[in-house]
Amino acid sequence: MNAFQPDFLWGGAIAANQAEGAFKEDGKGLSIADILPVGKHRFDNLNLEIQEDVYYPSHEAIDFYHTYRADIKLLAGMGLKCFRTSIAWSRIFPNGDDAVPNEAGLKFYDDLFDTLRFYDMEPIITISHFETPLNLVKAYGGWKNRKLIDFYEKYCEVIFKRYQGKVKYWMTFNEINHAHTLPFLAAAIVVKEDEHKLTDVYQASHNMLVASAKAVILSRTINPDFKIGCMLSLSPIYPASTKPNDVFSSYELRRRSLFYSDVQLRGQYPSYFDRIRKENEIELEIGDEDMALLKRGTCDYLGFSYYRSSLHEDGMRILGNTGGLMGKKNPYLKETKWGWPIDPIGLRYVCNELYDRYQKPLFIVENGLGARDELDPEGGIIDPERMQYLKDHVIMMNEAIRDGVEIWGYTWWGPIDIVSAGTGEMEKRYGFVYVDKQNDGRGDRKRLIKESYYYYKQIIESNGQKLDFAEFV
Ligand code: BG6
Image (cartoon, rainbow, N blue to C red; front, top):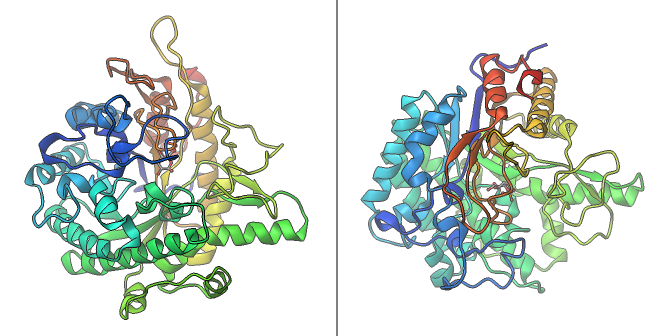
């Protein structure tokens, strides 16, 4: 039974720093993504200065800054109803704390949003997606510093006013709960694994939560029709055994993420946070008005990413937000080449969990399969693994809607190959469109259509009904 409403927003999602390149063009300043090299150790021993002999994938990425018109035209061929991307904060305020915005940066997004609208794609815009201006880390210590709240608010005011006639859907911070596991990307802070880590992470989180609330409040004064959401990484955590300790510890780990949506959707710190704060001796600097702002600035919807599930055991050292990096292997699930368990039922589970908790609309703003793609002798790419992944997740999304969950839309992560956030690789490909570029930057960046492109087109055309992909393999 098909449960997708006729105006369901099928789409694709990217982020500016993973696609645009042009890292210094038209007045853009450096962002935190611009000093990250390739490889899974890209966050170790961070060097905030650009080194001459190091290759930085964000500097050119897929050159979307120059190719967006052709790329969007190509993606429009699949019939996408919406397109999620981010505004690179450092194109608008190159240093983050500038007195006036950079007109050339603003103009770029005018043109980008006009192009999307021309192809009838609703822009879904992330205000900050792992690309805080680097100067805000160097001069202020990143989100640990309350001053960033004002810089962010000013940035929001500029973009809300400028794009109010072009953009309706916004999200304040990408995967805000990754402040714990990817503190540099998500919270622009450099943390050491010492006793102060949690204080730093929660202070940065508090400041971001207040900034998010202020953005929501401000947005309503500029255009009451805006829909403004929070965005979390919410792949579920299953207990690794039926041992009650494993079950409870998994629940606690889950709440470490849900803490963020609890604040952003319910408007207050959850009661369980008191104990976390006391037991870890976390001293937070909280402004007089902060709690009132959190109450007023709740989001309209919950955007989230879903890629996989993970297994957690009590006492396990937690690295990944989902416990995934150190998570136990789930013997019932296959994994991707990057070791991410493939779990479509997990998507149905999470949709139900989140809707039960908040009764707010959900938007699945990231889901996808990162895989290696090989060109066949005729130069084509047949990617049945990706089609299977897509099919299985669409089925479960349909089930979740039938379960009573309100879902506004689904944006496949990386409809065109882009740079991986986790590793900086190009060869971890999510796209329906291939980009000829390798991990070390080689390649002419030519675009090629993969077979999954036609499959997603069919899914969108049939509003999620025609799921057979035999004719594409
Ligand atoms: C999410 C991010 O964590 O996952 C994206 O919001 C990222 O920016 C995506 O690209 C997939 O992760 P990766 O490491 O495969 O790029």
